[in-house]
Image (cartoon, rainbow, N blue to C red; front, side, top):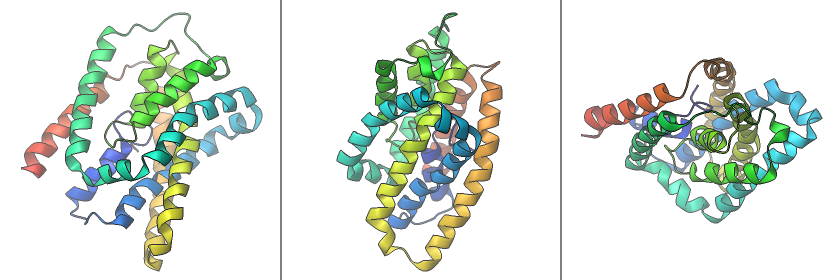
Length: 242
């Protein structure tokens, strides 16, 4: 449910693992990466025509993917180590929540903003991808980083939300494939069953999440998500971390 919302799906997985007292193992860290692939399949299911027929949109998605691809390979070990740090997640959620509130307070959407994904410039696409790369730190939120970047660059809210959906496909697919190639040989047989189950549930939940967010952005800003991030971090500090 949190994959496409600006509240950090990876951060929620990390916090849920600690709340459920699941030991932080290499498999758990891989699970927290691979499980998001189910959500990405939901985007492919809903937007398959864009991927097959809109070459200009696909080109811009690939350009936006480049910064994350490059930094992901170079800094893979460093960013994966963050998955074991609840404090990193909580600070990222908290500060990200404040940032969303401040941004929405001063941001004014342009009447002549970019309305079509194919109309996004390659430079804009690359900058959005650069913001996405920051979200490799769990708790930042890939969706929040890309959406805020798009709004700042003059895209319409619905346009950048849909672009964020599409950009998630190569990003999460590459992250999952890269991680599984490095670690899958060490998984037990029953652990693949856990992955498959989580993958299926993730797919179904993400279908609802995508439809919810598209309907939400037509009438609302992201202030409520900023408030939610702050409250979640504060409650976790008070009730779980102390």
